[in-house]
Image 1 (cartoon, helix red, strand yellow):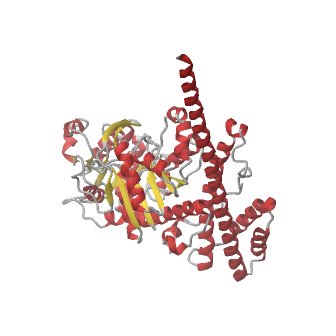
Image 2 (cartoon, chains in turn yellow, purple; image 1 turned 45 degrees about the vertical axis):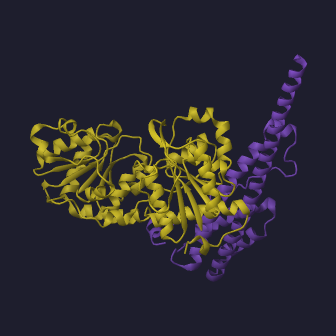
Image 3 (cartoon, chains in turn brown, blue; image 1 turned 180 degrees about the vertical axis):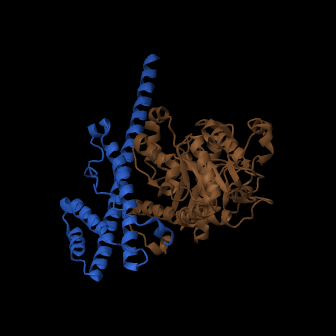
Length: 386
Length: 168
């Protein structure tokens, strides 16, 4: 199948949507399909061979953060040319409701269009005000995909339509095979040692770092040799100031990590802790930790419960409760057999999130969109579902 | 000459209204065509699932399943939704083994049917909302088509144990 994918955000900066698009494209190519990705990018930036640049992007505040997007007559002309030259069987756009390449592509397309919605936009007033304009975009879309239950809920409640829920994939092979960082995770035996991991912006309240800190400080007093490995953006001094002076040498800060080091970091800990207090629509980091074969302890949020299969693939604790978190951590660090049991179940769960599996589900949606556009039914073989 | 400007103004307004009407008529037409094609795809997937279920029933001597599949295949348009729901219930009541080829065919057909149903529902909704606009009704645009109809069936997806999905 010839597939055209439009990514609204520039590949020059890392981001969830960009990673999703790249992984999806690579998985589809791996299944034997022809894929072309159109995305904004600077002329001289290195791009994978399947990406076509739509020109430079401009930073624009959108939905609470800054997105680098391209929009305007030049971009429109490039989108049109790419669509004409590509001769695609299906066009797959991401985030079509942002003022971006994706929206231009939807409005220029004539054939089957599949759209993936990533963000769970909660500011519904904006959606309601622009409903008439958005309707013109939406009615060009044949099939909609939502990456999380929350994103799907927005579809149903505010955009008056259904969507197929297909989760974010995770490139299991990229996480499973890597070496831990040298010297990690170290010893872990009943009553002593063990390493905890946290990845994310520790200054952001929703990430729940203070809860982990409280649990760590208490537990470190009872458990000699306990270590904490933190990765993510932020100022080291700001992080170490949060801990009592005598515990600071048990905390290691890596700063921002690359995708590759993220995988190594996840394999360098005995327990990965996700103490988030809300705002997570999917829980990508949990699937990554599971793919790395690390035991996960996460707060009992809807999104996390779904990923962890109700607690079978990782331990859940009441959101915001540092005391229960501490006892859970202590119990799991003491019990290697239980950790092994959880990771074994995690392997099964994460297999459903592996990109080739997820890409096959996306291909079925492509088939549904093509069928609904010309009324014929496509053989499984042609879609590559065998 | 003030009269001249009236003429120009009126011409511009008439032209704009005409453009808008032509655009709207095209839009209504396009959305209805889309809904119709989606209905054809949905119909094909319903037939495909019933056929797969019949094959499975024959091999297993499942009399009730076979009957449900036949009824779904032969149903008149006004009975079809109920017949398809019966078939879904029958399929849910039996043990399906994803490693078996005939079972897998039924599971895959149900999954594809669920997608076709989702797309059809969305496209019918778009078409109906376009048809329902006051201006469209007033000018009786799109009257060459019958009103797009929903096909109201339960979600036909068959639940299979999580561990088995990975081995698919």
